[in-house]
Length: 270
Ligand SMILES: [Zn+2]
Image (cartoon, rainbow, N blue to C red; front, side, top):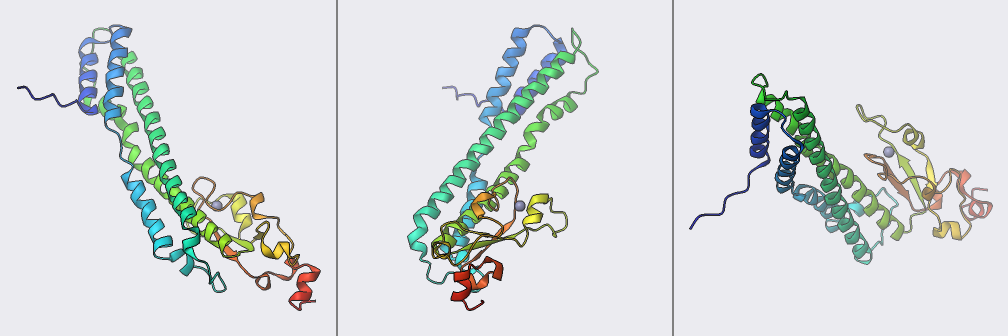
């Protein structure tokens, strides 16, 4: 009995396609579409597995939630009675969401890269003179056409890093709100050499934004000075933002201008 033939790799199909056109030159549209379809099928077979990203996100989750890092890393005066068990379903959901989004982004990037590869191939074919040519460096052509697909590893890593920031930021946010946080102090890493910071995020550095509907707002103890946190993009929300939110839990930790008259009386700052 004959063993089923192993499907050809993208590189094998690409080699055949390049050789075909080097030998024959442009012949007709039908054969170009047929080669394009074979290339697309081969590229789709070589799907990149999202395992690396999943492992990265799961490791962050383990550090912050399972090992309690999100609570341990809180500044002094942070929540002391937060029960992780209470918010764990929300945290778990956030992890699953990030894994889903990452896999989806990687898939979309991958599809775009495959289309780009096909485009390049077709562009190259249109430049081959009729009857073929011997002057073409086949290796060079193949590597150029494949270049876009090789960028995938890099894209992959960027997706993993960015989704990791978002996961960590959202886990901390869920825990902080559960723990009675009342405000957020923005921290931008604009001082870090080589960090491509956003100008408007640098301006937010050290600014304090109130959390809407916190117990302290409800009791009329504090008022917004720079507005509420939900009026701006959150840390990590924009692509590659690695700003951090430092949560504040007590009105006494806020500068005077955040206290209402009632708040000042309450904390004897009048
Ligand atoms: Zn930022």
